[in-house]
Image 1 (cartoon, helix red, strand yellow):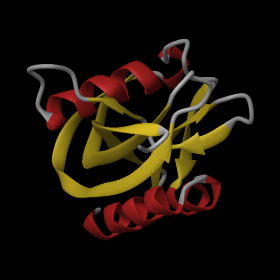
Image 2: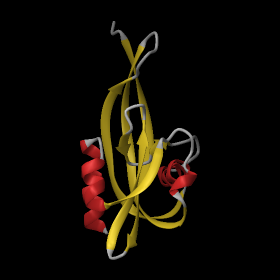
Image 3: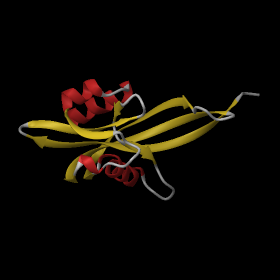
Image 4: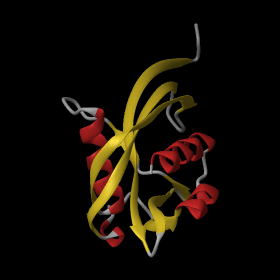
Length: 144
């Protein structure tokens, strides 16, 4: 018998972008004690579509209201939970969408986020902590 149980998780998030002074900017969030930069994303709720969840998560984590332009990609990975009596292995799928900024302020992010801010797209690619998200950002850049 294995010493862990496997659970599926489905999340959704977005690459929120705007054009400013002739440049493309995207919104990233800083999370965790180490302050790693990543794309806003979170779990898809019961009865919620991935697109609805992505819009909600981007709004909660960045303070920005956006509209979905198109799906970018669904990434898949495995990870283990930390700190529980029995380890849980998660098989996670994250649906990412390209989103056009409409309104809002990055200062209005929720408390689970250290900071939300705009980055020029090249700077964002260097700041992102995860290779899968850098790939998503590259696909988004091609779509923009």
